Image 1 (cartoon, helix red, strand yellow):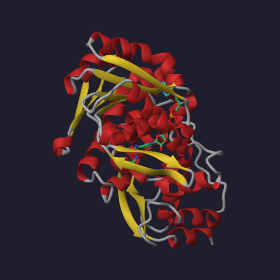
Image 2 (cartoon, rainbow, N blue to C red):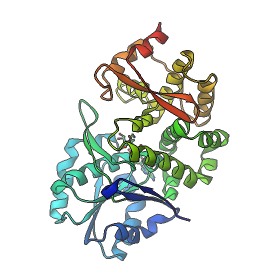
Image 3 (cartoon, rainbow, N blue to C red):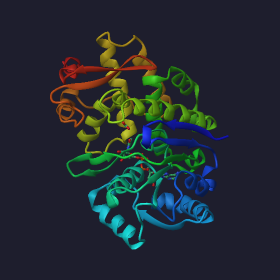
Image 4 (cartoon, rainbow, N blue to C red):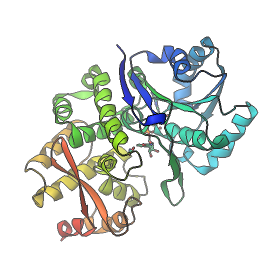
Length: 354
Ligand code: NAD
Ligand code: GLY
C-alpha cells in the first residue's frame, strides 16, 4: 500500500510517496505532478545499471521523451566541474523550462540534480527518486541542493523544492551494506531527536534483514519528522537544525581525517554518542542516554568511540559553516526522542577535554 505525506510549503508544496515496486509506475506518478514533453534522468553509473531502464520504460509508456545523463558515482561528482557537462546535455536535448529533471540516485545525485534544476534557465521542475537509505530518509526531502567547493562541502547551493519525492524501498535490496549502515546513522538520529518509539523499535531489531521487513514504516516515520521540521523552518534558521544532531563533532571528524577515515554516517554516529556523553556529564541529558545510544550504534555496525583528542577537533568545530559568528548552536537530547538546541560556543567541548 502506498504511504503518502504532504509537505505543505504553500505554492511550493509537494507529496512524498512511499511504496514497494513504485518504480514501475513512475511515469504515471510523475505525469500526475508534472505533465510535460521531455524528461531527463540524472543518475550515476551504479544506479544506471540497475534502475535506469525501468524508469525510462515507465516514462516512455507515459509519453515522455527521455534522455539519461550518467555521472560517475561518488562525492567528487558533486562539484562545479560536473555542471557544464550536464547543462550542455540539457541544451542539446532542447529541454525547456516546462520540462522536468529526475534525480535517480543517492544524495550526491539528488543534490547536484536539484542544483542544476534550480539554476538551468533560472529554474526547471525536478523530482527525487532516491535510491539510498540516506536519500530516502533525508536528502530527498526539504529542498537543500548544491555542490561542493574545494574549500568545503555544500558551499554553493540553494533551497529549491522538488515537485515530488517518489520512494521505492525495494531498491535498497541492491544497496551495498556500507551505504545501508551509513543511512542507519541518520535513521537512528531521527529516533533520538523526535521519536522514542522509532528508537525503541530499531533498538530491538537485529540485522539488515529485520530492518528491511519494516523499512516502509521506518522511512515514513523519518520523512514525517523531516517534513514537520522543514514546514516550520524551511530556511534552516531554527528547528530544522535539530537534524544536525551529531553533526558538529561529526563534521569536525570528517574534516580532521580529510573525509578518508569515516563515512558521513559513521562520523555522525561518533558525534551523536560523544556529544550526548558531554551533555550528560553536564546534567543537560537524562543519565543513561549515552549508554543506550552506544548500544544501538554498536548493534547496527556503527562506531561510537572518538579516537582523536577533542582539543584537536575544536579548531574544526570553530570553522564549521553552521556557526553563527562565534556562537554555536549544538543539538542535545533531553532524553531519547527529545532533541533541543543549546546555544553555546566552542568552550562547550573544551571542559571535557581537560
Ligand atoms: P551516494 O549518492 O554517493 O550513494 C552511495 C553509493 O551507493 C554510490 O556509489 C551509488 O552509486 C550507490 N547506490 C545508490 N543507490 C543504490 C542502489 N539502490 N543500489 C546499489 N547502489 C546504489 O551517497 P548518499 O549517502 O546517498 O548521499 C551522500 C550525499 O548526500 C552527500 O553529498 C551529502 O552532502 C548529501 N546530503 C544531502 C542532504 C540534503 O538535505 N540535501 C542531506 C544529507 C546528505
Ligand atoms: N540534512 C539536513 C537538512 O536537510 O536540513
